[in-house]
Image 1 (cartoon, rainbow, N blue to C red):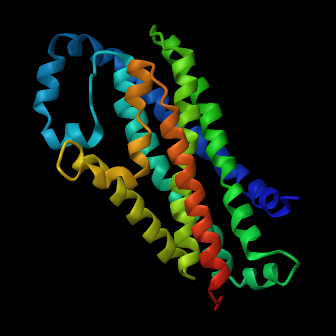
Image 2 (tube, rainbow, N blue to C red):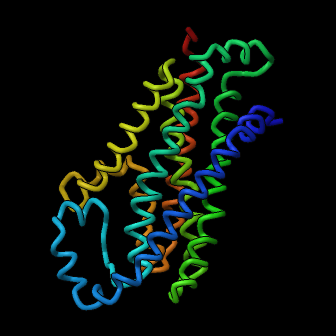
Image 3 (tube, rainbow, N blue to C red):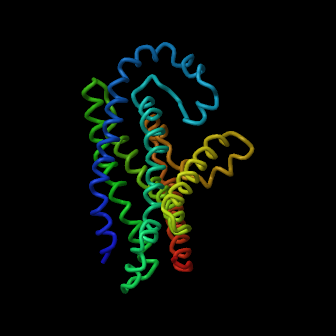
Length: 264
């Protein structure tokens, strides 16, 4: 069982290791520079935030810079997890099927006794390797780096944040998998996945507190809020359920689409 997922997962191990190192280094840099800013933020936090355009505050959901939690939420998690990792998982997902089709490997794979729905499912499951790896390694580094600079973080909140980010990243990967079955060219699928994912982020961010806010409900970003977890210690399991439903919907669409299309 899951031979395809295990095979692809093994080939993602090296990339997952490098991804974990890169995000851990980003976390260390963010935490290392925080003490040099924290004293000035305590007195001018409100003025500092007012200096930013309202669109930037809204886009990145900046709430406070006076605490390490608020600084991390903006500098690391909204930028690093919501945007960068969301785009990266969509990009990986976009290559999961299209790359094999483009290189002619899919014909060989489908000549074996495997269904197309199984191929899509197991290709998607292999993306769990980078998702889990980066969310296991990075929080340990974040917690240790915070202690190293004399700051404290709630280990429970930090662990919850990374656990809650897993359904979000799977939803982004699901967007990529749909793009991957829609076209044969990997580069085109990746551009589609990146464009759609970033477009959804912009849609959700810019429609907040407008008459069209409900349109942003289609964006996975609405259901993963680092500020809520780090600053308020609030874990919304309803949002997790929505993200899981989005992921399942993306997977079902990808399975149906791939099972109905011709492979050139």
